[in-house]
Image 1 (cartoon, rainbow over the protein chains, first blue to last red):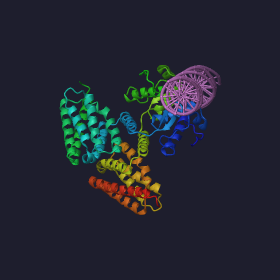
Image 2 (tube, helix red, strand yellow):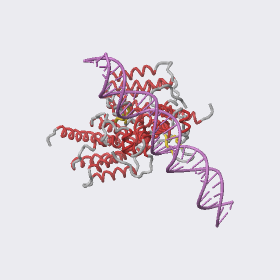
Image 3 (spheres, helix red, strand yellow):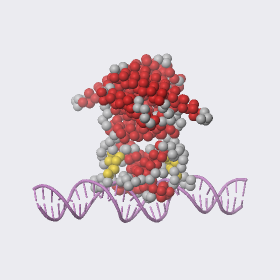
Image 4 (tube, chains in turn yellow, orange, green, cyan):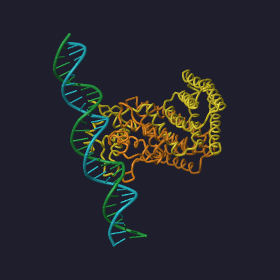
Length: 244
Length: 244
DNA sequence: GCGTTTAAATTGTCAGACATTTAAATGTAA
DNA sequence: TTACATTTAAATGTCTGACAATTTAAACGC
């Protein structure tokens, strides 16, 4: 493994980067065991705590996993879809919340991406994904539902729509976009009237997907986007008026 | 800040998660200073190395940054677009390479997402992004170009197309999809004939975007997808035949 | 008033030790 | 021989204490 020049950056960051490059380049393959912490410390000529900090950096990115005990150690981790989802959602959510991304921009990106899945979803939807969409639509019509539950069900519906495309890479990419919108969506209070409208759009989408009508589904999605945008703008406008 | 129950997981992971939740929930805001390592160790009732491992986990995710010296410490980091790009690309690349994602599935996801940007790109393209696309097309026609440079230019062209949409969130989401394909694309050797064909598709796309013709651009993209798929399948087939 | 020096606070690194966990090796009895 | 219990070795997890390097602010001298 590569060494570190007289770089002045943190040693643990340099070591983590060296190991990360080995993994990215495929020179360390999945489930391969890294040398023990003591051996790594010896190799890089640093102390064990420094090596451990480097390994924790890699663990935080799900690049390695560790096991205690004899024949334990650090192993190259096969990045699973749930782990990848989680990291993507964390990154996307923070990017939106920390950079003052407007509701309009986030909304546009989200629905543009979602429309991209729709033709595939209309072509390949299964009874299973259709049933999930129908179930979420039914839940959204329940009177006692809290705003939080309504939002969660909304996410689940759109998630099912995306999953209908049957492309796990697409599902992964969309997860970040849809989930990251959640905090922004939570700012909107859904009146009974707006819920009714949204359920209407969802029903149109599910119907179109069931009938393999991609364009009708895309059209309904575009109208839902426009409607969501008006809801968001109303909230912003109301917030600009400090008068209650 | 929250404490840790009698959980048996790593203390550093628990502490990192507790701080991460504070940041995600907005209770720790951008540029806010965390307590010093000694204070955190005191608060969580662990030793300083354990706190440091937790902080390194957060630093690896660009959630915090650290500064030495008096009035230094750990600060909540504003996640920048380049940092978010980098993490997204790392995650996407590893997800594809470690899970045996087929060329077909990755290709489908990538072009589906890219087509989603096309209507916005055709609407909003600027002289600047058009010039970038033209420049990359010109470079791709140079005879002496290596396969690596051709691939890089291909990525730059598609990146310019995506950026034409003028939506930074969309650009961020697409970066992972496009860049993560790069290792798979590098397996394809581009003959003079295939390069000529690709330059032709790129020219059609640029022309359509310049004329604000979204559907023509999408059609050219779809044909490029089909052509890329045949190239990839030829490579796979040639690889299946061990005979040279 | 200004430049220099000093002090303090904080992260970065090290050394050594002990605790905990895990699986293999070993021993023991039915 | 087989099954079960014990021991052992290897590795990570955690702690203590110390020192180095860095950076800012305050003190100091002129």
